[in-house]
Image (cartoon, rainbow, N blue to C red; front, side):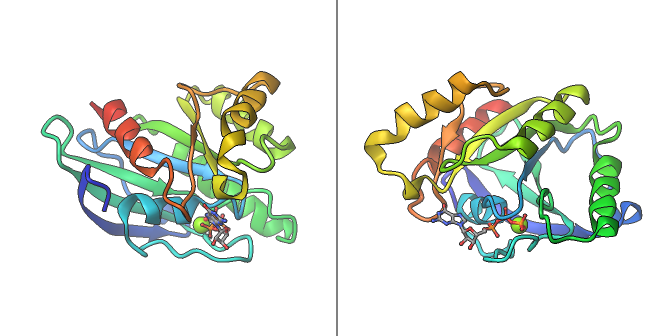
Length: 202
Ligand SMILES: Nc1nc2c(ncn2[C@@H]2O[C@H](COP(=O)(O)OP(=O)(O)OP(=O)(O)O)[C@@H](O)[C@H]2O)c(=O)[nH]1
Ligand SMILES: [Mg+2]
C-alpha cells in the first residue's frame, strides 16, 4: 500500500446501471478512465499495492465499473472511492457492447456530484489518440475536472520523459494540473500520484 493509504477493499462491481452504488456526500470519488489496455487496473493495483483489480493483456478486461473504498492516513478526508471504469475504444467489441459501455458510463456520470476528478490515463508511448481526444471533449462537456496521468513510462528511457511529456502538452490536452508520468511496472511516479490525490481530496 502507498504510504498514504491504509486500507482498500472492493466495494462493488457493477455491470448494469441498476447495480451502480448510490453517491454519498461524505465519499468523494476519483475515477480512472482511458482506452482499453492503457493500464487503469494495473495503476490501481500499484497505488493500493494489491492485486484487487483484474488486469490482462487482451483489451476489454474490465467490463464493469469497480468501486474501491480507500481509507486515508490523513484526518481531513478519511475515506474516498477510487472508481475503475471499463476501457473504451476496443474495436473488436460488437456495437451492442459498445452501446452498453456508453450507457453504463453515462448512467454513472450523470448528476454524480460526488465524482470530483476523472483521471484520464494516456499511454506515454502514444500520447493522445483520436478517441482520447473524444473522451476529453466529452468530459469537458460534462464539466468534470480532468487530470491526465501517463502510463507505461518504463517503455521510454527516463532521460526522455520530460521532453516527451512537454511535447504531448504542447500538442494540446486538458489537465487540471501538470500530468504525472507513471509506471505500474517500475512503480515510478506512484508515490507522487498518491500524494497528488491526497492533496486534491483535502
Ligand atoms: N510495461 C508496462 N506494462 C503495463 C503497465 N501497466 C499495465 N501494463 C500492461 O498493460 C496491459 C493492460 O493492463 P490493464 O491494467 O489490464 O489495462 P486496463 O486499462 O485496465 O484495460 P481494460 O480493463 O481492458 O480497459 C497488461 O498486460 C499489463 O501488464 C506498465 O506500467 N508498464
Ligand atoms: Mg481494467
